[in-house]
Amino acid sequence: MSALNSVFNAIVLNTILYALPVYFGYLTEGQRHMLQQVLHRASSRGFTPFDYDLGTLAENAHYHPFKHICTQ
Image (cartoon, rainbow, N blue to C red; front, top):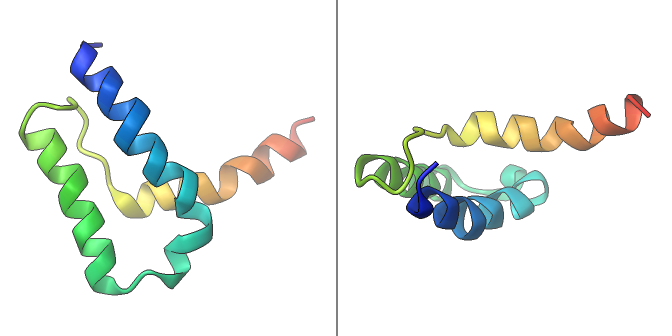
């Protein structure tokens, strides 16, 4: 993992993931597209080797706490 990827994950991705479970349902289609563009540009410009999908991230962020509670 490169240092640039670590910084991207720590600052940008974690900020998006922190708020995503609560605010994803309130985002307009334009706002979702804007966030998806941020993730795509980060991938295309070499900040991260992964091409993240906002919908998949939102689904995982929404169900992750529930799965964590069920496994304990």
